[in-house]
Length: 298
Image 1 (tube, helix red, strand yellow):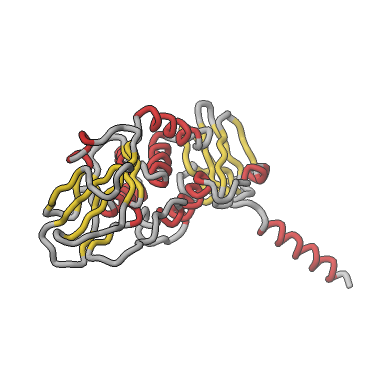
Image 2: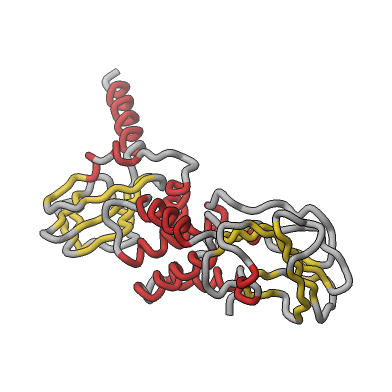
């Protein structure tokens, strides 16, 4: 009879342990160490840390953790912290852009997700529209909408036909029957800078591409956003980060969130910045290469 209460206690203890939060070190600066079973070791970004461990932050140090694949929290004051006291910090609003980013980073750094950085779209809210027609040109849903401010960025497509030239048509929102600009190109892309002088900031336009002589009724959105409106968006995106974020981590997060919001040219600039700030980070390098391939950037 004495074995039954002991068994129940063991099961409850096992359930309690399994319910404990999981932690991963996302970003840090200064001297940060982890104490586990009385053994102290230097903290490493991307490392999984037991909830029974303690974190020691020295003067001038900071550390940000991802918890339960869903939330971030930062320790920015010197001291020793027991991680099992931070379960309340492991809650997040599921479905939010920032929560999606946290899930993506967790998966990329802790799981075998194939080519790092190539699966980021699976964690984004905006995936583009489904193709509405059948023709010899396919435009990636990633380009369903482009919020453009500045920079070299191409509009691209794929062709199922053995074609040498393509018709590119650009329409104003006021007249979708007659293109305001059209040209013939030999490549399966056209830089926005080729026609940006014809556009007015703050206006929305539509574009499509087709094999020369054919038609394509599938229109994509090109929104020429003003710099002031983009700056407001950028301020909001930067504010979504944790209390502490190293420059490389911040640049990568901003890039991810800007890509999710279809600011693709600006996202590219921040992916480049992240890879430059932390050139040894495989995820950052791989994501930059994947982004360039996705959007035909050479």
